[in-house]
Image (cartoon, rainbow, N blue to C red; front, side, top):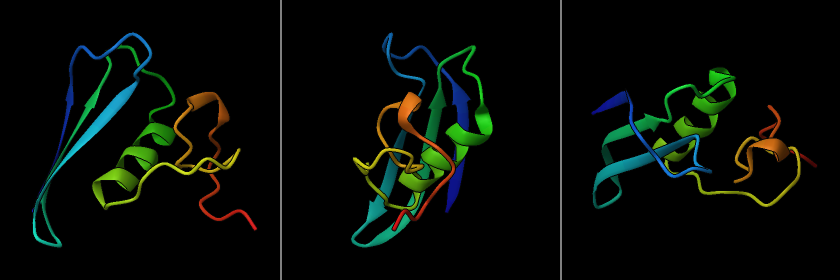
Length: 79
């Protein structure tokens, strides 16, 4: 498959979004769209690639998959 990265106008509170193309349980493609002017792309990339690989949001403060940017950190596992 492939992952496409692009800029596009998103909602006012959205920095990036990911859409996945799947066939059954097989991931065929992912399209990650970034709000123009987004910052800290290394953190956003890691979060959005998580979505591309099938991870959903995690409501744990400091987790890379937290849905709110100001509550995310680089931790993928928090005991």
